[in-house]
Image 1 (cartoon, rainbow, N blue to C red):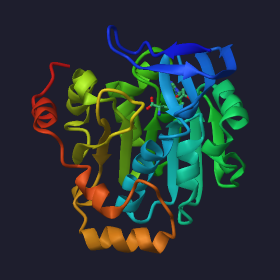
Image 2: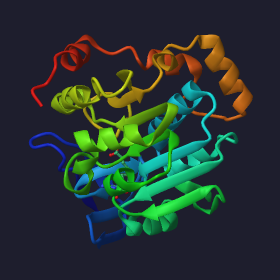
Image 3: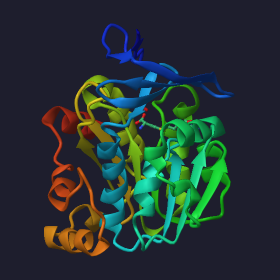
Image 4: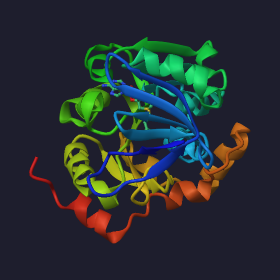
Length: 286
Ligand code: SAM
């Protein structure tokens, strides 16, 4: 049995025992590996970076989905950028009030291989009649679409390779353009202990673009280096500071059963460590 060594960081990383290599392919966009690990279950990596595992994906997908949708309160149209493994789609589809889901994933092979080897991620959500699956670059989509959305979730790889463009000023501006009044953008923004510059840069790009911007966080074990931050850009400042009772009522009314998300975690997630606050409040030079 060989090991899989993540190569996201020089000199620091995580190793997974590869009990069984389930699939490996060089797609048109990236190097895809899916393997079985005795602790984390099935694991998918792209270009040497762990993307998702069966064991801890619920934390990430619940927090990037339910925080913006319960905060919005009346989301009908949701856009997912990336998310090829289908976990985000599965969580969004649980919201019966959502009438239309567009998912723009650059790599069709990721979708096909995750349907086959990670079926519990999507759990049939790719067959949801509300879904419009677009295989394209998310940047091109948000720059050209005439459609508008209530919630946009950027579930991308890290800012290397095809994902890099999803962290640019143009991308955030285009997402802002695609939001309805009251709309919310949330994005995967890395682990600040290891990628603090990325958080600082995003803050500089959201500042002045959104009426309210901030970050929230959750610790996802296989996104190593501590808690992961999620960027928040909202057109209504009050959506980040809803009363706990409002969130409790929305959560209870949804009938959604979660394993990580709850209204108390929702509000608490926006409380950030001092070193992250200092970084995001110090304007970056770009
Ligand atoms: N949870 C993971 C993380 O936090 O890094 C992300 C998982 S998901 C598999 C990331 C997806 O983003 C991949 O399927 C990848 O193909 C997709 N992606 C990367 N760049 C993209 C782009 N420019 N447009 C659309 N999808 C993109």
